[in-house]
Image (cartoon, rainbow, N blue to C red; front, side, top):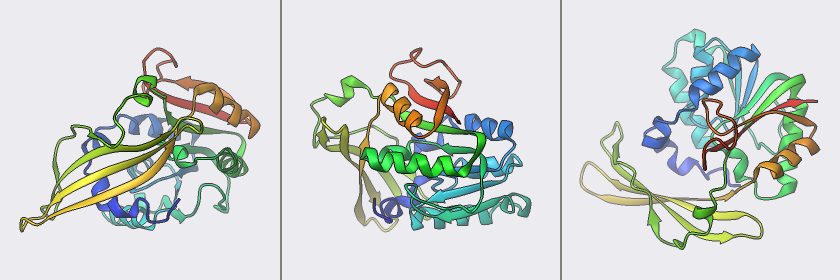
Length: 261
């Protein structure tokens, strides 16, 4: 994983309509309140979930590899009251092997950062690092997408898709985002994905920025075995942030709450 992987699009991230309307923030804030904190958020990005958690009175540490995303999170924090800022510590690091210098009652991974890990070795290393940082009985919330079989076999390689609405940044850039599956490795469950940003600047100049990244999908019981191997016991599996039981929606999400044994 490149440190600049998300830095290319950090200043667009908070404008993307599907991210702005994503229904997961209340779920994670509620879980943080119930834990009492402190919370570690792995893959905190621009603070989309981290900042509302701090507003709710919870001490939280945000870990992310991308310097661009961390810079954007810092800028957003500067707009918050001192009481909120005082509850946040940001740590740039690799989720596969990190040291936050403390233990947590809860570790969260909102919006699928775990799926950027494309090998079992990396997945286990990440889960073992998280396990070390949890107090006994602490919880991990692991947020994955549920593999949608129809989409995985769709004949759309190399073709752009996704009719997202255009958005406009504060500096007047108009942006349309589309997606592309460049390749699928079915044997290793990895797709090479591109998010393509078509940008029109206020002076009429046009630009295209391509954010390329791998995504590895995991099936339910595969993820449960990884958690068990890493010292976790699954407490719940949800298909949505309203805590619908897994299987009640398709494809839905694949959200695990797992306790450190």
